[in-house]
Image (cartoon, rainbow, N blue to C red; front, side, top):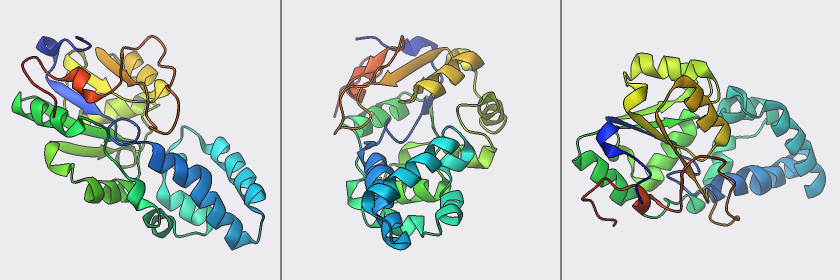
Length: 224
């Protein structure tokens, strides 16, 4: 399966949540665990607490605020990182990710983590997974002041991490982000079929999509 033309790739941009890491942690945290803690803190029923948070989430979807730990700590008056630590055992790396990263590094291509995750969440997940050494750079949308759904993200990313869009591949589980990257001109785009291992396959539109990272290994590499 040749989803990537590796002869035309110098830079590999990788999303984190749902792409390299199982989105089950984030989905469980935002949809179940945090609503439970929020309801407890407000003296609400679990259903009422969850309903109130879903309305707040929806209002911020796709914006930097939605991805910001600091924003939600202020908004909800809850120590978000402490509550995340309560379920941090759910943080998990998707199959064949480390083998893929090892093979790409061995090929001499630059590997950049480009994530909407807040730097506090990034720190927690890298500490849990040990993936940091595989990357040449770790870049969050918060340090660039724009979410990946916005064209400004890619423009600013190119300012701090020079890359040729025509010789770059992005792997991401978000269709809005892939659409944004396509508009910017990133040549090769790959979606993820099952970001959350506890959920059904996801619609990936017209993007080539992977079941796992063994399907993206550079020619001559083998999965681990």
